Image (cartoon, rainbow, N blue to C red; front, side, top):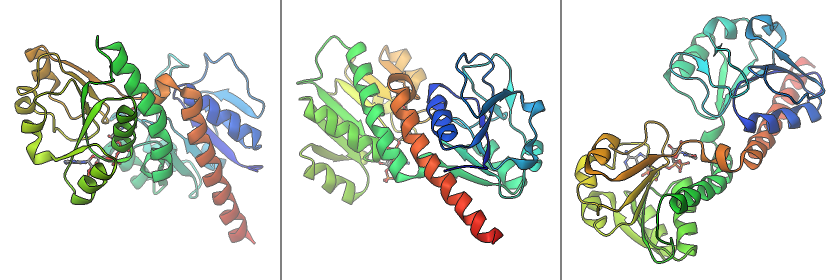
Amino acid sequence: MLTGMQLAVIGGDARQLEIIRKLTELDAKCSLIGFEQLDHAFSGAVKEKMDEVDFAHMDAFILPVAGTNLEGQVDTIFSNEKVLLTEEILSKTPEHCTIYSGISNSYLDDITQKAKRTLVKLFERDDVAIYNSIPTVEGTIMMAIQHTDFTIHGSNVTVLGLGRCGMSIARAFHALGAKVKVGARKTAHLARISEMAVTPFHLNDLGKEIKDTDILINTIPYQVVSASVISKLPAHTLIIDIASKPGGTDFRYAEKRGIKALLAPSLPGIVAPKTAGQILADVLAQLLQEDLLIRKEKAR
Ligand code: NAP
């Protein structure tokens, strides 16, 4: 249980609703910031504006997956107001107050460091990233179906990167009957790709390996799908780039060449917000309960 905990849930999309549901069920008190337009009410949660909240007793901040933008703004689909997280706000919280976010950026890293508050990036955890790869795969399949006039079955699919998402994507497209190749740079990854019964290649050979690609799926958050790579793709290739913004594709050059290239962020939040929210809610509940236990032990 989270009885006695005071949490600020700030902004986000439908995934945050699953988190609020779970945390209030566990008896935490939640201040919902950036939710004025949300119709639903949760017992134990109150909608507040940032300047109305008493941060002096806040045990944790729950930010949406993207955290803030580089100016400190938190995205929210349930409010028209600008929700800003600043170092000044964090400094008003007790020292133990922890900031939970999916990912971070230089702004969020900077304000949490300056305010000396702990920042937990949930997507750096293998368990969260692996569970989250499931709705990500479903979203990638949805995009491939929506943006092509051929079946996945029998098509040449190239996946770049064998991380948590790359592995799940390669396996799912293989199971759907695509001829899958995966590009990676580590020998252990190349061995794993062979073991998965799909075709491995080293990223150094990317230019040579993509000549017959129908669907190119990039999971590498680094510009690997360069102009030179795009120049070697067949004109009909669909590029789906799921890597975090700005993606790993030279979108300007793809457009110039007339190749359809889609940056596809937040797929779990689009195709399965309930599941994606539950994944985060379960991990958050566990982490907050551990936090509470540690503080109770210390207080004894
Ligand atoms: P991950 O497990 O860290 O995998 C990243 C992959 O990229 C690894 O194979 C890594 O290989 C490779 N890589 C990283 N930097 C590289 C470089 N400079 N050159 C070559 N390869 C490089 O990450 P993930 O969990 O699979 O997520 C992949 C990306 O998708 C992330 O940007 C994540 O934020 C994003 N994502 C997006 C969605 C969405 O809905 N669009 C959903 C989930 C995740 P090495 O091991 O060799 O470094």
